Image (cartoon, chains in turn yellow, cyan):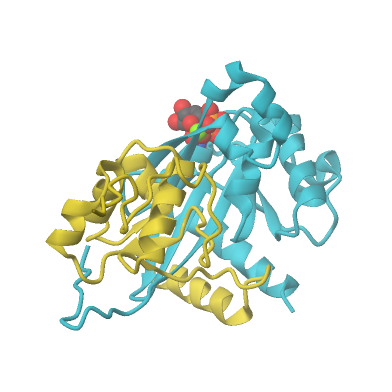
Length: 119
Length: 193
Ligand SMILES: Nc1nc2c(ncn2[C@@H]2O[C@H](COP(=O)(O)OP(=O)(O)OP(=O)(O)O)[C@@H](O)[C@H]2O)c(=O)[nH]1
Ligand SMILES: [Mg+2]
């Protein structure tokens, strides 16, 4: 008889298992935007409560810093949980203007144009 | 927000980036962040230990793990695919190590100066000059419209190199605060390859 392993969720590992550290493919900077492109109630129901809160909140695109503030969750915890959600394809990690150390000219020009448009 | 996922689950990507506002205690950092932000500025409290994960010896001082650091930040939507965050560094300079998390990925930094307490921004100037590659400018926050020192005196007092721009501002006024950000980006454009 096979006893199913209940202690390890196939979907999301609690951050305790990762020891509070993560090596994500995506650098999760304070400003990195997170969204849920394809909200799925079943996914939501299977998540641990903290990850569930993030998954629900990010139906509206949020930065890592905003997630931390709005859920009153330490940044380190947010990063680990988001990283896990991203590894499972449950959230979209958006790009930052930060590529290999230096912002490019095009981005700076676009930021300047954007600032000039506001008035 | 106007975000709507498309039916197939794919969605356009939004680039985000940030600018850091730093300076001494009480120089108007939070005020400037609030002036430029399209949302009421948010504050996030980061635990000191998690803010300095690379600093192993902090783990040995458990009483410090409960210290929190307040970071203010605001947000500006620049175009439909680009969002700019503006982060104010914590005023207390003993939290300087926290800034690494704030500056990682930043386009540049604004160091706010109150000319009545000009030396308060020394730690910030030292940090951005020596410990980061970020382009930075100095913005003199003219409290009550008063400029107690000419700009060149500020440059001398801070031992700033001639290529660091110094601008005057009123952190309470959105146009003035935005002008500071524009000046920073123009400066960054002169520095970038
Ligand atoms: N008169 C005048 N007051 C200002 C100006 N900018 C900020 N203040 C006031 O100065 C005080 C400090 O401003 P904050 O924006 O909180 O300064 P801060 O740099 O965020 O301070 P800390 O985070 O505590 O280091 C507040 O009472 C502001 O209302 C200004 O341009 N003129
Ligand atoms: Mg402040």
